[in-house]
Amino acid sequence: MALTGYTREGKCVDQYDDLGSHHICINLASIASTGMNFCEVTGQSDWCSSSMECHEDRSLMCPVENWCVCQWAFASYIEKAGGCDKIQDINCSAVNMEAVKAYRNSGEKYADALDCLVSRCSLESFE
Image (cartoon, rainbow, N blue to C red; front, side, top):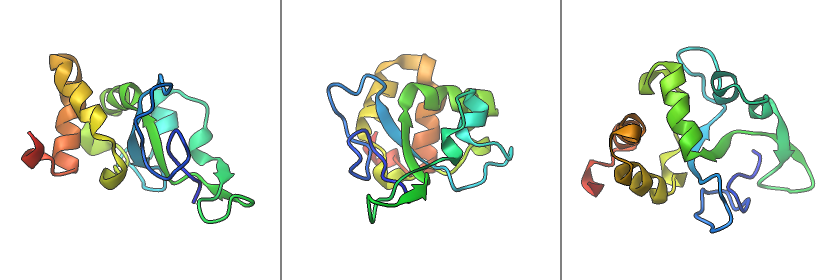
């Protein structure tokens, strides 16, 4: 699969110059109940179906699979898709907890995004 993360290390890292806060890892190979991927729902160009450097061999191109997306775009994705149960799978082990902290500090505005991560990633013990 293509290498993910702002620094292309395979996980969502928190980096000072990552102004997009790419902290939520979505499995773009999964199928959402709506049949639409993250790019289609959020209105972005279709990089979700593209190929990038492979994780295993950077000289090859692989399809984008697990990918770190902006935590703010993730919140919009849930809203536009019609709820957490309508989105693609989340790769919980690669999600950066900075997103959870930011959602918690934002009050009700991002409550649905926080609730989605808590339920999908079994984060109750971290509250």
